Image 1 (tube, one colour):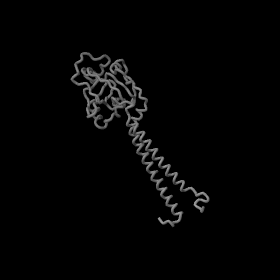
Image 2 (cartoon, helix red, strand yellow):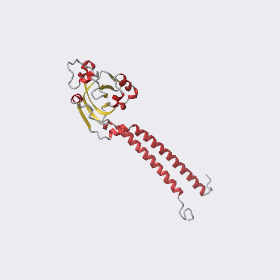
Image 3 (cartoon, one colour):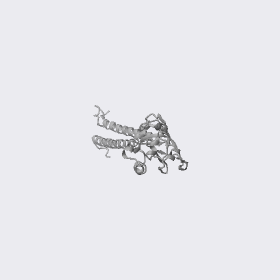
Image 4 (tube, helix red, strand yellow):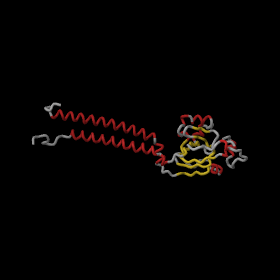
Length: 242
């Protein structure tokens, strides 16, 4: 740069650089906000579950509860629940990580990483448990299905929100379990082992997103402040001879 160039030219160049810096940091800030919002949105259900308080709803023995006349599961989607004495249906799905089975009592699809009772443990049962006759009459279960039970606790969700719904579970529910659209709409999925305090990754994503947005905003504010200093009129006598 020519040392004899006019001072005004140097000032103009500094202003141009400062404006470019503000523009770049504004664009970067916008991108960070969009990416952070997208990341948090993907974990919104897990974050809501984490901040729900973590109080477990102990529903108890679902067979006894239904036999007593309670027709609706006393728990709402999004809550942390424990269900005991679930019926393990004959139709089940297994993946590398999880096992899925359907309990028709309150129409709950259970996803678990734990082993299920072996089918060889099914034994003939002479009597139908009182209050559950409708399960056999409607061909929801066989008599020997009452011999198997499973206790599960975790995250209760609407059936259509179970992970893997669009990757094959929907076809299984329609074709094998024979559930109608109306039944599916009022059915549940229980993600066994998913506790509110276990949603660590969701919290990490939220914290990282907030920090990234704040850091980007700080960089933008610093650039704006520097530009305003350059744009401020010089005080009388500045730059003059001493």
